[in-house]
Amino acid sequence: MEDSLRVDLLVVGFGKGGKAVAGAMARLGKQVVVVEQSDQMYGGTCPNVGCVPTKALVHEAGNRRPSDVPQEWYERAVGEVHQITSLFRKGNFDGMNSLETATVLTGHAEFTDEHTVRVDTLDGPVTVTAEHILINTGSTPVIPDIPGLRDSKYLVTSTDLIHRTELPKHLAIVGGGYLGVEFAAIYRRFGAQVTLFESGSAIFDREDDDIAAVAEKILVDEGIEIVTGANVTEVRDGDSEVTITYTNDGREKELSADVVLAAAGRRPATEGLGLAAAGVRTTSGEAVEVDEHLRTSRPHIFALGDVNGGPQFTYISLDDSRIVLDQLVGEGKRATTDRVAVPRTLFMTPPLANVGLTEKEARAAGYRIKVASQPVGEIIAMPRAYVVHETRGVMKFVIDLATDEILGATLLSVDAQELINLVALAMRTGVKASDLRDAVYTHPSSSEAFNDVIGAVVRTDEL
Picture 1 (cartoon, rainbow, N blue to C red):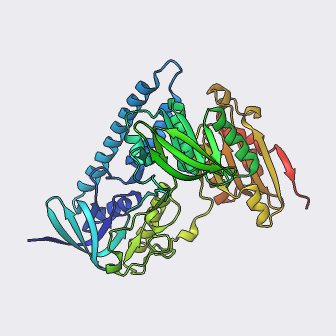
Picture 2: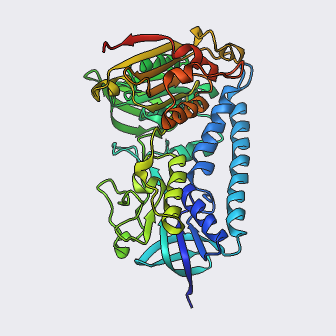
């Protein structure tokens, strides 16, 4: 006989946003079920195959000394990272399952109607009927439609790669976005030869040209081969390596590698959920369609995180949880449109962090601006860069000429992933550029660089 449960809240997918709502509702005494199809994914992408393991690998790769044997160092690092992810995974499961009114089910979930989901667990099917349902299934890697790639025995996704204990000799990466650049930087520092293929005319194409030039030089100086304007046309397996055929500058070329990473982005994980049975609409990009309160076409069903087609960041999923909780037990006012000055970081070494508008975006929007910029190695007020032996990079601020408001900032520097949060907070709360410049910071710190950089105006539009 099939088991059945009736609950207040059902969460499909154990990601950041869903688990936050589930935990909060369970602590309010609501009956909650959380479904996760894999016992290796409790807690979602971030602690298992995303932010935590990849950023741990950034750290481990940066600590390798020239005398350390690459394969031995890499194998040890991967082992330590897996210990961390296992600890986090267990903590996520135990933290949820220990709540008195919460139940975790492991198995694939599929809607049978707008209030009911069938979960195929190892112990048999379970039918869960809920008043409210959260879709929190995240995203999956995109495999480009390149002949031979999908069936290649040398193909890996980012998830596959971080579980390998053998360091690639030559890693070929198809895709030059955030994922491709981060993995290129990680594996080059571990000692692998790395070739990065980007179909566009440049990597860092969202950045201003001056920032992009500095960032690309850092990667090239690390020994990463970057091939832009590359159209990969075929992947052909051999006995011990794979041959990648591509066109570049009108000529056909080939490259051999022993591992190929597909880094063409991630798509919302909606396949197999039975959304049509629930009357939940999806977009042309396969994302669950939501409004500014994250309600789907069925108002009692919400979608959080990557699956709703929004920015694919863990912290956005966390903010999604605040919006949904406000709908369920709050005033119902919080919305995605409230988000202002959301920062982002690409974890190369040093990190590249942004918030707000670039110079070219500000000009395109019609602002009259002043631009303050300085190479990290020339920032007198930032001795920390010399102390930690990382003087590469540049800091840049785009400032409204009339109001002195910070329109945007790009920080390519040591500690940029932390500094950008301070800039974002200043932007959200109306702190002027001159206030950030003249603030009192601890010494020696990275934040005191603002004392110099914001005053280093290199371009000003006339009023």
